[in-house]
Length: 402
Image (tube, rainbow, N blue to C red; front, top):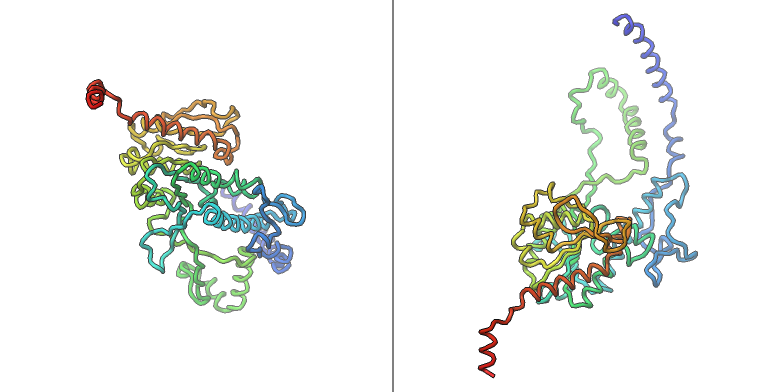
């Protein structure tokens, strides 16, 4: 065996030398010229030549065509960056619609934030803290979506109605609900990393072989050239490297929901709180209930989940919590079955019914009317249950008074 290794060693060394020679011949400057175009995109819808028509559909201003992802063929990364840049504009556009069309107010978090610390925000109707009757709370899922959105992809490729929370907000306000729109993915701000001085030694420089260190010190220009080439290859567009600074008490969806509950929802005058929570938003609500079980049971009248990813076993939900969910929650899940058809579940929590679609992101929109009917039934049942039943004695007293 030792003899085989000795024979193979020179052969491997020759391969390594040949590979190094091949790599040394590659002109990185020429390689970069063949790379993608600059990652520079417009910061407005008009700059992209798109606008929303009267049906809430995103269309090209000149051609009227829907959004095209593959704007440049064979440049997937560049197309993806373009799509993300448009997505950021969509987020700002939805924020504007929440304030202008829905007349919601933007409220910054934490409530006692200083001017120098990062902040998040939510949206609330003007009567959110004073409406004595009922309140609707909306929680979207994980990912790039922000307050007012169910799915960015739907807003871009289909329309605002299916992808945004605006239909829920407008109908709720029309029916006398107060509204709070959570923003559970707004957990941090990004700041550009301060550049490390070129002469600063690397953290592991003490472990650097002496021969390598001498060669680097002997020819610093060559070392810098190689470092620049490496940086150009690793980050050819010179994209800014950022550091995430988390928002106090709102550093995760679960923290955010708990903070909004403690500082707003639990203090609101509404007798009946109703939730709509999509995907990871369902997990966020269950976690909120685990943390504030008694308070939630006291104030929440009904919860509509849409393709929720919660798991009462993994989240260690108590037996009393699971029983409450069976009575007061319903999960509209993606399914090929007709809308509202019962769907079997392996978990002992809330009933599951079909959302009438197999597409996860469409479940909130397809179950829209069913959810409001579910809320109406829940409120009616609660009012019937709390309404005092006349007794024989009370009837006699009324008769004598008459």
